[in-house]
Amino acid sequence: MNAKPSLKRSAIFNLLGSVLPTFVSLVTTPIYLHHIGADRFGVLAILWMLQGYFGFFDLGLSAATSNRIAQLADATPAERESVLWTALLLNLGFGLVGALLLLALMHLMLAQFDISPALTAELGPALPWISCLVPLTNLISVCNGAMAGRERFGASNIVQVPVVMLFQLVPLGFAILFGPSLRYLVFATLIASIVSFAITFAVTAGVFPLRLAAPPARRHVRQLFSYGAWISVSSLVTPVLETADRLLIGSVLGPPAVAYYQVPFSLAVRARLLPSVITRTLFPRLSALDSHDAAQLSRAAVRGLTAAMTPAVVFGIFLMQPFLSLWVGHDFASKASLVGETILLGVWINSLAYVPACHLQAIGRPGIVARFQLVESVLFIAGLWWALHALGVLGAALAWSARCALDGVLLFGVARLGQKQLWQLCVPMLMVLGAYAASCVLNSLSLAGLAVWMGLTCMALAWSISVEPRVKAHVVRMLGSLFGRVRTRSQRHSVNQAMSGEHRATE
Image (tube, rainbow, N blue to C red; front, side, top):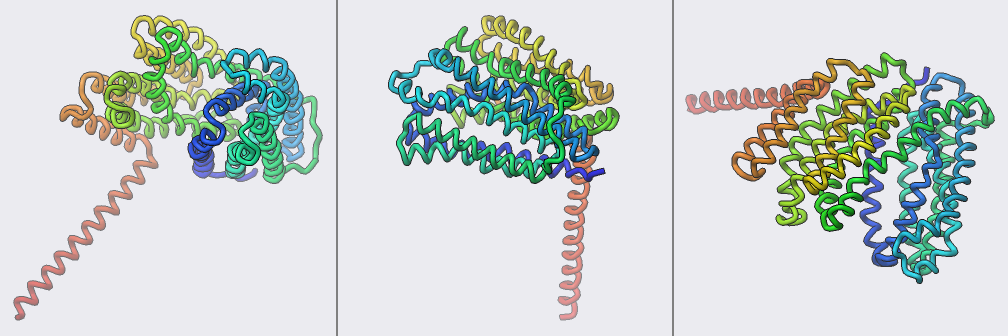
């Protein structure tokens, strides 16, 4: 049996792979705006969005590949290689279908945006190149899924660095060298995509490894499709659950209200980076385990995530108002802080629900997650519409958090990770709700607010330390070492005083 990479090490690789692209984007965005202008940058962003949405033609095969290859951890290399070749061939075919459909619909979709005639003329010759990005993206996704299935997260995330750099810097280089025309920018993006696929495939071939030991096989098709179909449903519904709130706010309350929601929302949901990294790391491992061991690992993940997220969310609820005041001004914060605090309620339960969702998908039950999301999307939009008319922007935040709570209850109920696991969530839930209630009636920077802020945060930290054995052991060792040093220094001080007294007596 092959030795598995450390989950801790894999999680660190995934965290770095998630954070580094953000920094690259932060650095290059103002340079793009300087060289190509806001109008062209906006059109480029729309093109990337449309091309990304046509990634639906992956049909969940990259996740299915990751799941199946993880299950074949102890199978022959030829069997795993056959799965990968089958997935690559299928994704190439569906990517080409997606490319043709995107090319056919591109003019219709772009007509929905207010793009000037001059920019439309620039863009015309580049439309076929945009379509070519769909199959290339599909192939890259399958390669990444294969590396994830083998738990080669180090290699996968190391590849992400040059790939992200290529996508950001090659179009920028073309803009500087040849001018800001959209034709050059899109062509440069295509070149970056081709080179990125070549790099990703080469690394996959090396670490998988690919030895041309087995061809694609028809027997894998049904299994990949039956799993991937439900993943593709989730990939269609998830954007609705994540963006319907802002679209309806803009429609019902107008664009200015969107800002009072979007700013605190984007701040609060960044906390979901941790559960995202953890579940991405767990997925292939859970896929390879039997049901008992998978449930045990998922329970440990929920316990660890709860221990990390509870003090962070309690602290964040109280921090929201003063941070927004410092960041965007007191007037804006007075209208947006309660929205952010409400969203943090949903972030807490949503972060924990990542684990049962990942667990269900890993053990071969992605259909349950997809069905829940379909039902939730209908209930969410209906509840959101009512809440917006009744409570305004705050109503949208309450509807979003209520949807997250429903999602968590359903997923934990079906995943069956144990009644004890659910009871253990009661105490941290009460602390999070207590922090929210206190923030509604107290100013975070008042004396009473600071006292409650620090008190609840310390309580949350103490609870987290008590329930997570590894953290508890580390804290005990750290405190033991600290007290040991204090005791040693005290003893040395006593000895020095005694020696000094003897010396004075002798004199």
